[in-house]
Image (cartoon, rainbow, N blue to C red; front, side, top):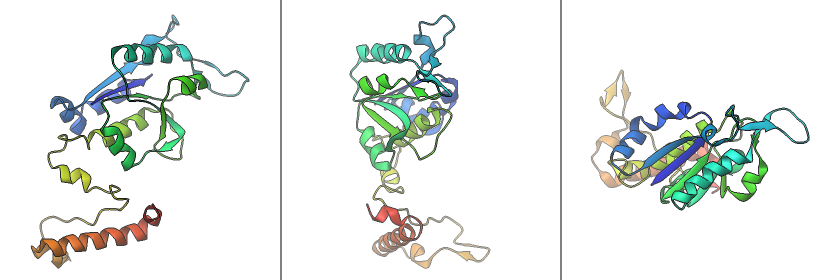
Amino acid sequence: MRIDIITVLPEMLEGFVNTSILARAQKKGLVEIHLHNLRDYTTDKHRRVDDYCFGGGAGMVIQCQPVDDCISALCRERKYDEIIFTSPDGEQFTQGVANELSLLENVIILCGHYKGIDHRIREHLITREISIGDYVLTGGELAAAVMADAIVRVVPGVIGDVQSAFNDCFQDNLLSAPVYTRPADYKGWKVPDILLSGHDAKIQEWEIQQSLERTQRLRPDLLEK
């Protein structure tokens, strides 16, 4: 899988995409992540990529030209399954969306910035708009990082124990059951006896019950799905 991230702040993402699971996934040859500085594609001699908004109002808007040129250059090299714009008014990013995107071969993520991007880019080039939450960030770099991490970790082979990824919260619209490790008794705080029983079927039943109970108590909205 290949993910191309277009941003005005590549330095904000460089450390993130070259650390931890994302770094290991790239070293294994399972994923490629490429950062593209939008300023490299502008025709402005001062490397500006934004301008004032038609109709007035506060804030600057990313122009069509650098975005169009960057995406066009990438699309001349390969076919992209999705061209995603990180936008607070996009569809909600969920584990299901991450799973879906992890099955694709080539994805572009365009990071929003300033007041937004010229709407003509959204109309003519973007295939999908995604939000990581109902709030506004200074830029889409954090959203792109969140999405890349969630997508890459479920790509087959990235995590050694594949069941670990698919037993995470939200995979079945349920929160995970509590987890414990040694010692079994710490300051009188004890691990539930069932987890020490060695009875796999009963442990699995306990985990399902705990998952349902925690979801009902903490995120009842998930059960409605």
